[in-house]
Image 1 (cartoon, rainbow, N blue to C red):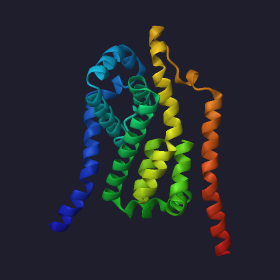
Image 2: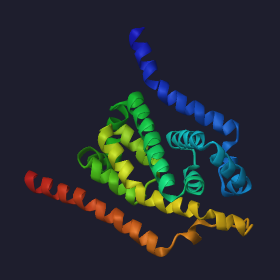
Image 3: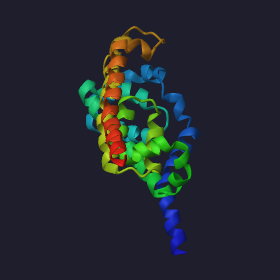
Image 4: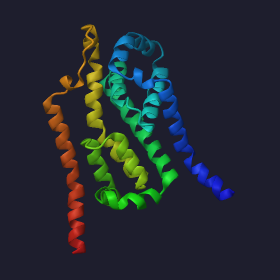
Length: 239
């Protein structure tokens, strides 16, 4: 009985996450996580921040943590919101901290629930990822954060499944998402002029220049270099 209770307890954090996702679906939360909603209520949100600043900061951070932890697709619009409500610098800091905390909570939940069991079963199918996450965890994760070739939530799940050290995960996530986050938040900080145009059309791609995309891509490529060098040295040593 004691062993069964321990096994059940391991799944409690994951059960809570699934419950939050279920409630969000039932309340149709996804319907509100879009630019139209932000445009409709931007003045009320601005007024609330003006009169209840620290409470607004707390509510924003908690909401962002939950969105990332439950992989609900709303992080992009919340990043814009962070810039609009709190400005480029404070907004970036709040988003980076909240996203890192949310991602870390998801990793912990997955590690508690599955441990090494799932990794042993699927390791051969994704051997390249397993090898890099095991031996080059920090640099590999940093590269995936700089250059988001994999969805944010999928990297979090993979880190949990392959039992990555939390220190490496937290540092790589915190540092790696700063450039991309700043781009989104900075766009959010300039949304006042977009709202003033009273246009229902909004395309994020139109506000991100090719230069920004090239810079982010280069950051991702550069961050892969230490992991590649480490792998090459290990191969020579084994040879």
